[in-house]
Image (cartoon, rainbow, N blue to C red):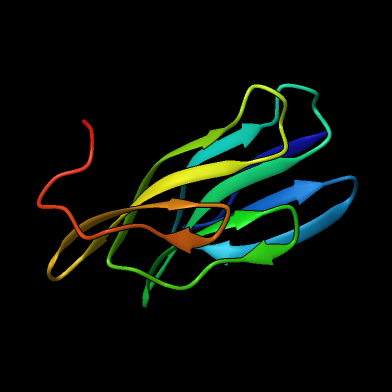
Length: 102
């Protein structure tokens, strides 16, 4: 089980008794379709990052639209940078775009 819990003015993510955080916010928390993997977006003073299982992605000004593939083996999300947006698939940034999805 994985949950986001408010800790005063901060947030943490708890999975199988192990806690991560604190964060300013956890706007998205998502289980893979087979319920074996957990991913979430963690917002800190420095920015936002995607956390997939225990792997923390780089910090960006913004992260949104976190998704798992139907079989749960791949992840994707959209990051905001000062120059525009990029899709990130399995931790690899795609081409810069003025706007990726809505």
